[in-house]
Image (tube, rainbow, N blue to C red; front, side):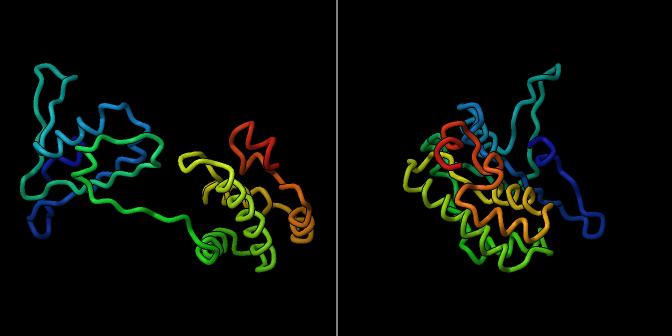
Length: 185
């Protein structure tokens, strides 16, 4: 935040440069962080306590930072904080988007293998959605990419054979806790 608040000028236009700050997964931070962050954003300054004498870092009023905050909704954020945020929910990708993600990263996989892998993955995700509460961990796009990467090193015929089995190949790349591993492998 300190770097984002520092005033910089564009050499070509001599105008202030707006910075972008990403606060990722704020719901995992110390419970006071959202309110502390809210105060800093509201006042456009914050105190640097670790230097002597203490000093304040202020944002350029002509170019305050743009702040993006992400949350996985693992714990509730303070209402006062949420009131001051613009909210955008990102849906889990559909089949076509997942197909594009996999094809972009693994361009040598056949359409048949990609479809079989996605079918198996989406079936697992659906089972988890039916079994778990809204906030519980379900397989995500990140695990899908890791799983396909594990399969990718095999010849295509071998991948097809693994995906045809009722059991998940390389379940530990998808399932991140012991109970899920035992239930869905």
